Length: 275
Image (cartoon, rainbow, N blue to C red; front, top):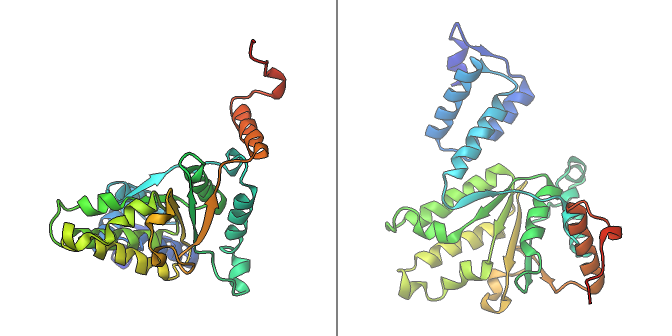
């Protein structure tokens, strides 16, 4: 497409090596037809290809992802909006350092991800969204329920859906969120009796993907009850399991402070409740 535009008298192609590399990276994860359509749209807007083409392609790519039922963008929250859990916040900051050029030059392996396990309402989803902010990557939530339903239940549609979703995640360099992980993979054992093995194949594809390194991708799974998970679904090679407990009194005070700051209220504005 780029070479074809070079021959067009009204189109300009002004791409240095860095801009070309950025454009190629932005196109990864799209099918050939999607790449052609996105490039054509970008060419019409810019009358060719230039330094902003990669940004336009990324915008179109985000729009395509939003139309994918299995994946959804989730807004990040600043790490300052997380009260307590200082050890996990520190762990996320250290994980972010493994994605830097300096770490890569020293041969440091990138952090793979975390499995946050704990009672409902303990801030696991907030920590997941904060990870997106700390790592500077978009948060894509994978919905395995939508994977199973995509394609109207046609044979093989779920397997194609999970393959497509993981391909997009791999090339987007994102934080991949797996909410309620134990429910998502819990139907694997009974899959042969309930859906002809479709769930087992989908979960198997996910577990195989989690076992492999994917540069630029950080996985955060959340679970309420680890007892529902098989050992192979939580082993160390896939992510690091972390128990998220009820906040301590000190953590609760910090959480309260976060809510006060979000509402522009200081401690001096707090009045004791009437007796």
